[in-house]
Image (cartoon, rainbow over all chains, first blue to last red; front, side, top):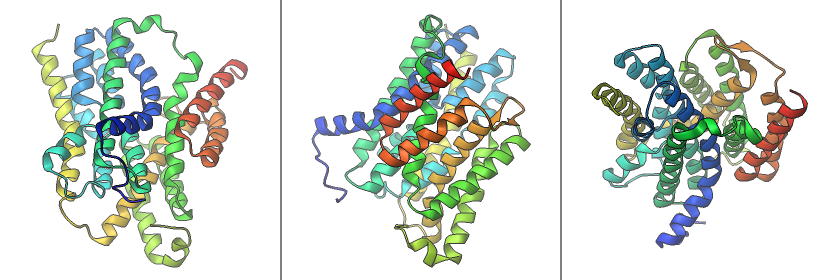
Length: 242
Length: 108
């Protein structure tokens, strides 16, 4: 399969993008609703909720911001916290840049807006497997973004009417993360890197409050993975490391 | 009603979130990366996802504490195996929800 095998008409781009994106959307709805309900209780109007979702588009930092607003924190403190929580996108943006070479900078700037934990992992897998292109990836970004913004606003409008914890929907994001992780385990070497990251993240998350453990553990594990890959190239080449 | 302060807050949050999403894409996609950096970046997805998943499964509360017996972790085992076997994202999400719902009903 080459990168250019996918048909280029708008309808098939949209269809492929939506087909790939729906599990992410399913995961966003309960979290978006929950965020909307919390934000509404903190005194934000549906319009204000939609504005934040549109401008920030990063779930966990939005939850933290609303909680901080509730405690009367200042703008600078909330913005600084948001920065540290969302710093992990630096790593994702770097990793996905490999597949967006030579693209016009205007398109890159648009694509950057939609990089989330979920869209990043999904698009990366699709790019790697082939039959995927920038436009399909951008569709995934924007469809999931639309679901996020809409579900947070709906949560703010009347999310309290929707029963919490219905149908195990709280687990949708975890289910998605687990499958996206499976896609990344393309050999024992990636399994090892994942294990190092997981162990480091657990230890760091208990030792250090906040969310800095995500970036720290990822950097530690990727570096350890690289060193091991360099040290034992033969073991790691056994199962398609590329 | 949106106050000026709230608008500034959202713009500030948006800016500090957007820049880390944008800067590497902007800087790196225009050039050829050294081999070691490509290999390092190749490790990042497995690392980030593991770093997101594991603490969510085995810690609870704030400050976080270790917990090795909870529904999240219990459900994760069959869901992970299902994902390994089927590689279906939609199927995994739906199975995860179903099992988590059942676990909540029967295990409390």
